[in-house]
Length: 280
Image 1 (cartoon, rainbow, N blue to C red):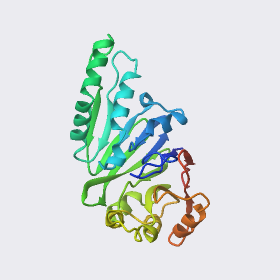
Image 2: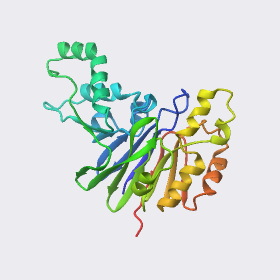
Image 3: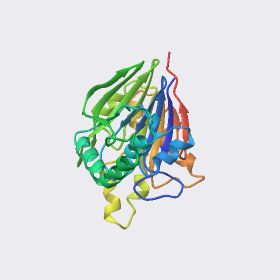
Image 4: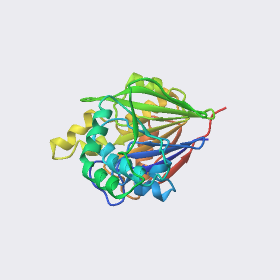
């Protein structure tokens, strides 16, 4: 049965209690890191997962808060993998991902050169296998299948969501998006939907237009819940809270979601875990 861990539930605004957007999905012995916001490897270490233990890195889109730790993931996996011929890290993301990975490795070029010069067993830069996609099946091995579909976070484009299926159970990770038909189709009948959420009722009152602007390309709590309802999912897992949830106000967020969705609702701080069971 798949297990979801919200590694980072924060936003682009640094928060001492919330790492950047990132979700860990463990299924059939495989470990998938979905997005890699700031502090992700520290959060992963807290649940016993290191960069070397990742089966694949899945990127929903290329906004800075979702890829802030890409360099750390690439370099740390490289220097902590002691296999003589390490397997490349599969990185699956939208078009543009290969360019970002290449640029990241170039930015760390001095570091990579230093380490190769110092360690006899490091003879080549970090190996990676980048696959760019917008729809279709992108992973099918050892009991786990992953499918991708477009989402709508324009002008950020293209953006994608992931559906991970294992042992008859399914987890969908929406990333940042407004409601759209393609996400409804990807999430149809899923056992869990992990969806980013913002409180538009709060954000719209910001004195800064730049802050108000985020309302037109993110889903509100109610919109995410309505997506879950249309798709007929069993559990809605909310994350990437904007603004950050004030301690004691969790039930307020849950109540807003419940106005649109009658299923199970999960929300929590970093490291919140959700076991996903297949419906029979």
